[in-house]
Length: 402
Ligand SMILES: Nc1ncnc2c1ncn2[C@@H]1O[C@H](COP(=O)(O)O)[C@@H](OP(=O)(O)O)[C@H]1O
Ligand SMILES: [Mg+2]
Ligand SMILES: [Mg+2]
Ligand SMILES: [Mg+2]
Image (tube, rainbow, N blue to C red; front, side):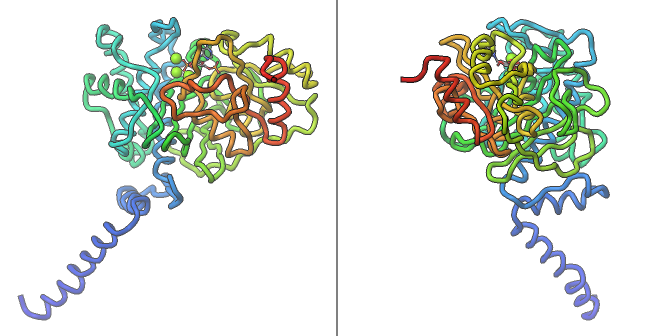
């Protein structure tokens, strides 16, 4: 090669290539990911990631619950949801198992050394090949097909049915106070899901027991943050929202639509100026929260409007965006321990939207003691300004005052 061509090759091809490679490996992982995305796809506007802390965790959380919701929405439309009864007599469906497999697959692909605490496990499926194959049919045919770059970020498809079962079972961490732990409720409010009501696909990241990221998909809630809070149901037009929050960065909502990954809108709780105009947002299930005690608390607070009853963490999202006012969950038994996956995302989203969340003793929810909230009892979530007033009346009615 003549000297001039050799120089040209060095300065015009080799050197820029070297500089690009160096810049790629020295850049922080979030901008590296954006760089990959911008070269992988012509539709770079559809997947955007900021450089703020936990940006990658938030993006993967949102995309994975979005993908899982595509699966649950398919099951929601089916008359047969493959429901079985668990050892505690609570229901689980093919939607719960399938959603858990898809979410864990995405987490394992992106954060292989993180632990996972998830609600479901696969032992029943290993003894029921027909049920297992139904779930596998659903899982292998669910993807973010309108956004191939997002699908590839999640690691694409699960390779086999047996891998799917192993993934479901890898949500068996015992939780605790140290390290990074994701907690998953693949369908929260399974009873609501079965009756055609509200349900939520929930994911949160704990770091040393503290919730850092929370994301909750509510396929049956209105997209519109200002829509009135009602217990009406269905997943038709204008429905489907994702609530999320990162600690210290506020809370947002955005539509749950495939492909469209527009940035979220900030949400905040509605101030309560008159208690008489407020209402409680409570479980549908009388067995999950003591309804007669909550009626006495409402009366003492001067609340006259009836409680809005809806299943799942849709309640936390609803009060965080100001559609509802106060989330109340009063223990129905001394032995039941709340599960961390039923509350972690909602706790952060409400606090980032300007709320306070405690148990009935006035303590913050402690997500660092294992798979359950063993050191807490019940939940009160309310705008900061009125939380102490609500707690005071709760303690009076429950006889918790000295
Ligand atoms: N006795 C009880 N007290 C409180 N919560 C209970 C309960 N039994 C079950 N649950 C939890 O209540 C969750 C539903 O919450 P809500 O009442 O707000 O809709 C269920 O989640 P899953 O549906 O994921 O099993 C389940 O974990
Ligand atoms: Mg359950
Ligand atoms: Mg749940
Ligand atoms: Mg569940």
